[in-house]
Amino acid sequence: MNWKLFGLAFSLLFLAELGDKTQLAVFTLATQHHAPWPIFFGASVALVLVTFLGAFFGDLITRYVPVHYLQVAAGLLFIAMGAGVLWQAIPAVRQMLGRLP
Image 1 (cartoon, helix red, strand yellow):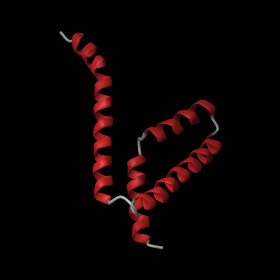
Image 2: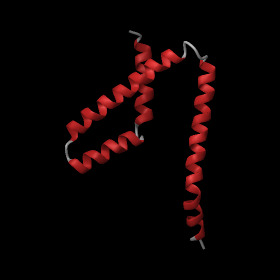
Image 3: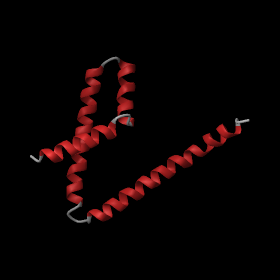
Image 4: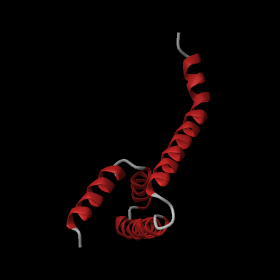
């Protein structure tokens, strides 16, 4: 096993997931149901499965599509998602600005 890659994957994902919507969803479930262990195990299995699918299909896709194209596509998708979030926020911003003196 390549422990350097293991450490890199762990540290990047750990930092990326802090405050993420997944963590907030788990936090909300735990506060609503007061049952942390089933929520922990369910969320853990879900994250393991999603990570497995990403690693498996990432390896499979890079056999046929150059990594550069995938990076450009991922960047464009993130830009599109960000633009969508901003577009949805425009009415709230207008309303907020309308209340300013």
